[in-house]
Length: 456
Picture 1 (cartoon, rainbow, N blue to C red):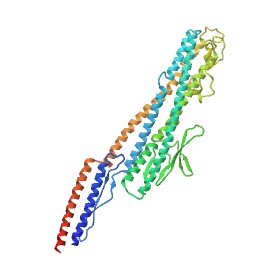
Picture 2 (cartoon, rainbow, N blue to C red):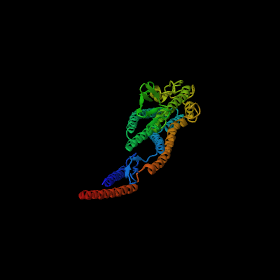
Picture 3 (cartoon, helix red, strand yellow):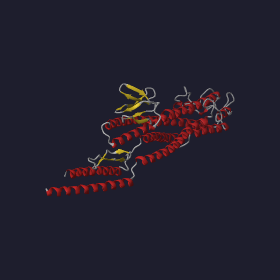
């Protein structure tokens, strides 16, 4: 009877082991479309028997079929892809802002020089003179509007940076909490959750995540600042700069504070920092330089010539104090707007019919008076838009390249960790058949025990 009881125990263990296999296969099928889910497997282990009798079977804990090396490559790829996408999106927006509807800056500048050419043919015509002043006002309005749009784009990017910093802190805390839970439980779901948190962090800030021999994941930003160290997470804080008002980023751990604004070079946050601090700063600087070059070069010639009243030494544009802020400050001299006779179209002392001043102003169209004497004003105006357009085209190319890499890595992950429905259905059938066989085995042993007991 003791042997029969042992066989009954063996059968019960077999049913439990096969049921574990059924459970894992069913769970895999159920999560086939769950983002970040890693296929699980259950390993069956033969038990040592007594007196050369079979010892039965035991199911081990469910295990993930994952590759840490592949996961690290995917995180790096995701960080690069999200950086390219965010940068391309920001550039597309600012390109639209700078071109917008209506004439571009170079077209407005060309219109001004065209009006100067026309007034040279009829220097005393009041309508011609008003047309020059109107074209100058349109150009100044266009430069100011685009400077305003550029600064608005920079502020909006700054707002996104601040919001992203809060999300980084939240994900770092989630990663640390998951590390803590994994320290007491080997549940594969917790490990999937940790990988997903690390992937989202990489999409935001780039950086590197690694699993150390103690089983804990650590996340390090580019530049070496540690964001997550096992069960401990630091915060990423955004603090407005007292001078510029733009946010600076720091990894904060208690009293320790490390500025990482210039270190983050990946993820969507890295893209926003590059867009705000490099691209948009460059656009604003270009607009300021263009406005300053237009005002100073035109004023130099305008003040050297005379209006219809014979007076010289007067500017066309309000003089600027310097390059910084010139795009927002530039405007046509209000006295010229009120009296077009002040437009200096004649050489001093030649009389109102002379057009030497108008011709000299028109000559600025081809003179290299911009960018330190290396570019024409028209070329400098084109450079503002062309620089953004080229950067946008490069960013879109980067998106295409990174998407190809991401798709390739996703395919590799599916081959290692993805759920194959057909395979899982085969496993499910296999475990169910074995379980049914064990149930029949136990039923047979139970009948034998019943008969034996009945005979006693």
